Image (cartoon, rainbow, N blue to C red; front, side, top):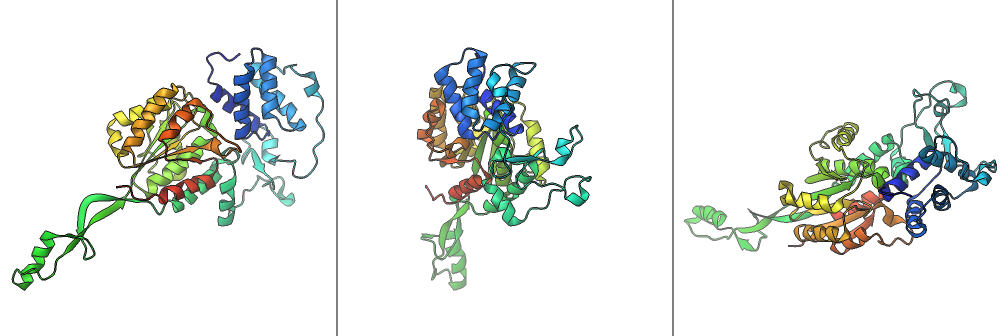
Length: 396
């Protein structure tokens, strides 16, 4: 049914289209859909329809929205795939079942409608006394920003992502260190600083009454981040860019984005404006929301002149592990990366799902060469990643 189609990209695109229509599709549903495709192997459009509907739809009231989204992809007009699903859905009750509420300006239609297209309840709308005016989005307090840290990426808008990006910069203030080859004079040092000892002996007739000690100079450890911007990571790409900018602004960092090719984003994300930096980075990556070749891009990084910066660094890989390259190639590339780096941490947004296991062949091949695999589906989990990196110990 889907020959030559990246199934991960197709599942992510369908889930994103459903979310825009108000169907709350989580990462677990996308994983269930992909596994169902592998098991059922749908060969006709009705079979694919039922495979997607069973795994992605949770409520009867969402069936009509699912049918409309499915029809947009495969048919010019509304499909008659399931006449029973065309029945009028049950009336929604006022309460917790209403997961999303449209803004007044968005319901009015047109391209000039301002504000957010959807907002989580309680809805942020204009008051009754000024219902004719535009919708107002209030300023968020620090406690509200912290509460947004537990909201999945796909439910956040650009403004909220920018606020949480600054929240990440505060978390990256402390960072692990490494011992450099340089030394400095220190009376607590175990070694003897010969030059400093002789200099001080000039005051005592060249008799070294006091020996000057020395200790190694400690510097912040470099971090290298690789961010997957393929179609299957579309919901997380913008948030990961904010993490990359936070690292660039606070520590010695080298950041790269990859889909089918590798793109260096370090100078682009160094801009003081978060919005401008993310916009420039988005324009720089020409192969975003396409296929994924993790093994090819890891080899490209290690073979380039930037590969020397990986030596002794903490490497962060943000990806769901769906790779178009053979698993054995990814395993070999990750083995080289692990030998050169100080620590390799894999950030998988799907690792937060209950009962998650790395069953994808490429993820299973890369996992033995990772020191940690952490969930990275919310800004709160990204902050936990920074905390895990900050807690790294010396490894001489």
